[in-house]
Image 1 (tube, rainbow, N blue to C red):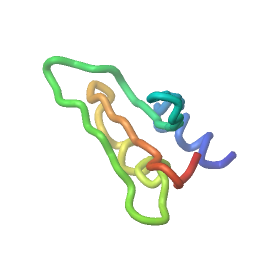
Image 2: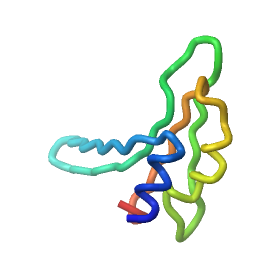
Image 3: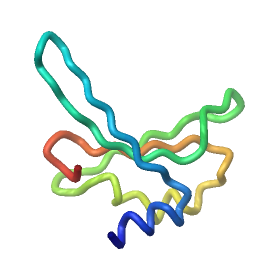
Length: 79
């Protein structure tokens, strides 16, 4: 619960994605801040071993809101 509130305060929204490739299903969870902007790059944050997408919240909250930021949970980590 604490990380959900912290993510919300950092301006992140949670998303889930389910893919199906010939019967092989995979689900992914990611947080997103801002929206795509042609003037500025999107930044994708990938966590290390035994971590999750919330690792980056303290960094992302300090990035200006006009940048598009995405944090991804790798398979087997987080959600």
